[in-house]
Every structure is written in structure tokens, then in C-alpha cells.
Image (cartoon, rainbow, N blue to C red; front, side, top):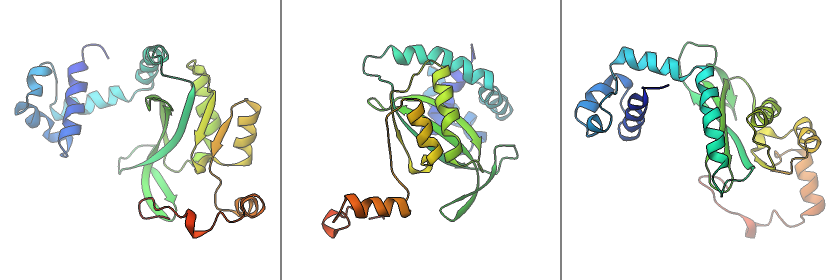
Length: 213
């Protein structure tokens, strides 16, 4: 998006520093030092909407990755070991990606963001958005194929429990990708714990993470 860097960077600064809606961005800029850093920023409300539409285009995302992936691979600390997860983006926008999702009994209207980061540095490697009613378990193969299409040959994957299925595990084995994944608390997990990890449920191993044990 040549020539629109000031708009992008000023919007990022606005989102980091202010919790208001985009309609207040222009007023925020007029009272911020950012107006001197980004003098060509166009933050009138209609212009922001047009800018966001251009930013969200598929061709913009592809152009970004064409430039970003070679830069990323040039960083010495970056490996091809990745972490894959997704998160819901609740919203009431009237477009095809906003759908009803049931996550652990919580119903919401959302789109879903699939995100891949490099393990050593935490740098983002890849992202894509899908409809909110798409479950994680059916997105893994496409994500790996997209990574390889942009010349990121995954060597090792750490995945959230939402990606755990027999099909995905077989795909990972077939593609020669070592992986670490948490099993859901199902019959298989319970039988493996009972057979191989006697005593693991002892209270001495309890650890509090947030409001969970």
C-alpha cells in the first residue's frame, strides 16, 4: 500500500494509546505528537473505512507476505519451529466471516483468527481469518499448506488442544512434522495417564494458572 504508511502507523499508535472508536482518531491525532511523526495520515472517518477495506484485501495480505517472509528468514534466531493457535474475534459486523460460535459453552458472534508464531523469537509467521463457526480441528492442513506455499517448511509444531484429532495427527506424521499437542480430557487421555503416569493426579503436582488448576 505505497504512500499510506503514515495512515497505517498513526492508526496503530491510536489503537495502542486510546480505547476509543475510530471516529475519534482524527481528533486524537490533532492533539498528539503523532501528527508530526505521520504528517500524511488521513484519519477522517470515511477515509479510515476505505483504508481498512484496502488493508483487508487478499492481494494486500499476499503482497505483505511476499515481502515479509524473506525478511523473517533472514533473522539468524528464526527457525522453522512454530506455535499454531487461533482466537475468536467477537463482533457484530455484517459480513460473511461473522458467525455464531460455541466455545466451551459460551455462545458468541465472531470471526476466527488463526495465528502462527516462530517459537524462538515469538515473531509472527502467518495469519489468516476464517468464519467464526469454523472449528480449529479442520483448519490445520490448510494452514500448513499455506506456510509451505510461502516457503516456510515447518520443522516442528506446537499446537493447541483444539487441533487434536486422529486425522490431523496422521497428517502431521505423513508430512514428517514432529509435534507437541495436549490431548483433550477424553477416554484416550485418561487411559494413557492411568497406564503410563501413575500418580500424576496427586495433589503435589497441582499448579494454578489463572483461575484454573
